[in-house]
Every structure is written in C-alpha cells, then in structure tokens.
Image (cartoon, rainbow, N blue to C red):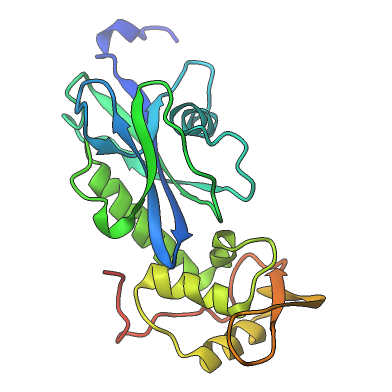
Length: 239
C-alpha cells in the first residue's frame, strides 16, 4: 500500500494459550505444564507457545498441545477460541498478544512433557492458582465461559464419553457449576429438550446401586438448548 511503512510500528509476537478442562474422579481438572525455561522457570502455566508465520491460531493451539503435553491424537477434543489477551507487560520478554482457547476433553490420557515443558499433569481446578503470566485470569475466564455455555448449548456432552448415562451428564453440570441439582428435575428437563440427547437402543450400564441398570444416551443433533437449562439465583456462579 502506498505510503505504508511497516518499520514504523514496534514488532510484537502472537502466542496461543490453552485452558484444557476435563472431569476426573468427580472433580474439574485443568491441564498444566511446569515451565522449563525463563521467564517463570519452575512455575506452572497453561500449555501454549508462539504462533508460527504459516499457522492459524487454531493450528498453533493443536500443535502446542501436542508438543508440550504429548496429547496429539485426542478423540473428542472440543476447542473454541476464548478471547485475546493484549495487556502491555504481560510477558517480560517483549510485547506479546495471546489468543486463548478453552478446550474440553472427556476421559483424556495422561500427558507427557515435551519441548520447553519440564512436566505436564492434570491438576484439580481448585489447586490451579499462582500460574505464570496472566494464566490465572485466562483459566478463570475459561471456567466462567464453560459454565455459562452449559446453560444454553449442548456443550456438556463434550465432557462425556460417546455413550453416557443421565447421571454422568448431571455430574458435568454439578462439577462445573459447583452445585447439586435435583435429579428428577434435571432428568425431566434434559429429556424434554429436543435434540439434546438420544437414547442408545437396548444399551444400559450398571451404576453400582441396587436399582435397575441406567439407560445409555449419546449426544443429539441439537447445538443449542431450547429452553435453556439455567442456573437459579440460589445456585449462583461456580466457586
């Protein structure tokens, strides 16, 4: 373009960061890496890294997830862009703008550290504090985004295996929202919502109780919930 001088602008880098969430042992967990290099060597952080010149942000996010944690072929991964973090000074090396992603992964494998990560592990969300850079804020935003989307989309099924019971689906809501739900009322709302779930014909799973085996369901074709499955004011927001 005539008159444009690219050297008139201070260069900056673009990175991607991933808040990868899952359910393990009935609790919300997040995937963290221990940084092996400065800045913040030895501190825990969300996986991520620099965007390469020939990559889209989503391509970079999937590459960094594989390189830093070993999770390359992840069945059922739900990945969506969260927001952009661009505060000056968020990285001591230079001006860095990060495109952050929220990711959901049902029944994930154990991670293995790679590239510049010293260690990678699933950490209970309640213990994921004091992270490097501004990753505490990114993780909090991802948790709130997921909690809000459970109200009006079918995102909860992304936490579940391919076939699941309504009890397992309810556990997703209770864990992310941080509150107990009335089982009959939850079941009634789910089954009354068109396209939310579909029964798996003839399939059932023993749940360890004395009652009959629980029927199995799979995600239905709907993308949004009509009506929404709202948190009540008493339940509030997740702790």
